[in-house]
Image 1 (tube, rainbow, N blue to C red):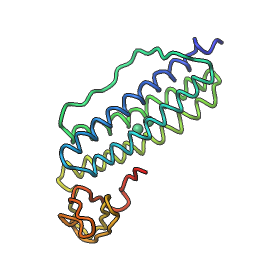
Image 2 (image 1 turned 90 degrees about the vertical axis):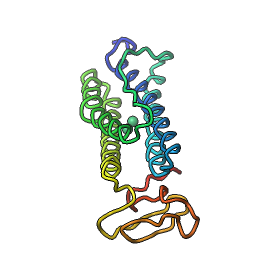
Image 3 (image 1 turned 90 degrees about the horizontal axis):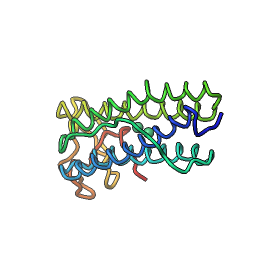
Image 4 (image 1 turned 45 degrees about the vertical axis):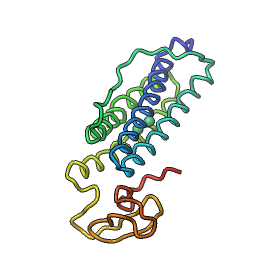
Amino acid sequence: MNFQESETCAVLMRAYAGECQSHTRYLLAAKEATAQNLPVLRQVFEYTAKQEMIHAQLFAKQLQQQGIAEIQVSAAFPLDPEHDLLKMLQNAQMNEQKEAAEVYASFADTAAHEEQQQTAALFRQIAAIEQSHAERFAQFAVWMQEGRLFCDSRQTVWLCMNCGHIHEGTEPPQNCPVCGAVQGFSVRRGFAPFTV
Ligand SMILES: [Fe+2]
Ligand SMILES: [Fe+2]
């Protein structure tokens, strides 16, 4: 079969376009988090955005290797409401979950059906990553919704994402005693999205 006319080619184009738009959507959410003085959420979104760009690159590579030089796609993509960071986290969770459990799972089946095993494997691997994105967004959405981004009922180890200072307590300090960064840079250790 001519690759250009295959279903595998069509789903790779959709996946590429989808990753490009989620990359941008998360950068826009990160920009909003900066405006709302919540650097921890900026880093959560930027960290995930970078990974979506890499996914786009991996899908592009599959197409490039087949000599494809133009993306043709008809698809629906979500658009977040302005300024509502909680909604952005919740939408991100929902979309990642759907991508993992439905979209990429079915794209993997499509590719496997056409005996494009390498592409099928890539869809499965990326689906597993999107599942982890969904879980991280879900966790931050719950903390934000319950007003617990910077407090916990139990003794908790907090990390200043600006300088790396570690603080133990139910709340991180208003300002980091080492670098002076505001509380918005604090994250529970183990949930720090590293941006390097
Ligand atoms: Fe992705
Ligand atoms: Fe993702």
